[in-house]
Image (cartoon, rainbow, N blue to C red; front, side):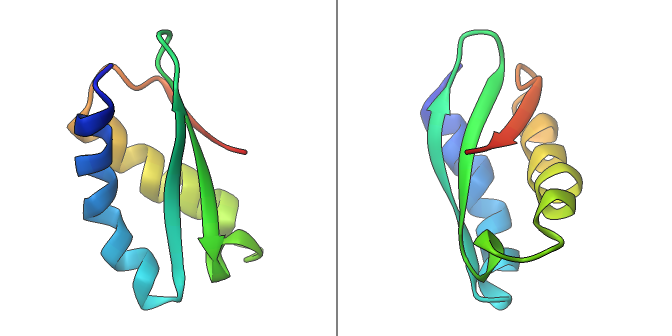
Length: 74
């Protein structure tokens, strides 16, 4: 998978996260479609972070980069 393509997709959700004082950092991309990210700022300690990860970030990435199978937080 192309890291640049994933970063571009993440840029689309960063604005939404920034409105709440958070951000997302790309950590790793595996050949089997697993994208590892780190939620930072207020997203890192938010009780809703798993929902944001799955329903927001993962959904957006899968839409932009079909090879993405799962997004996990590290």
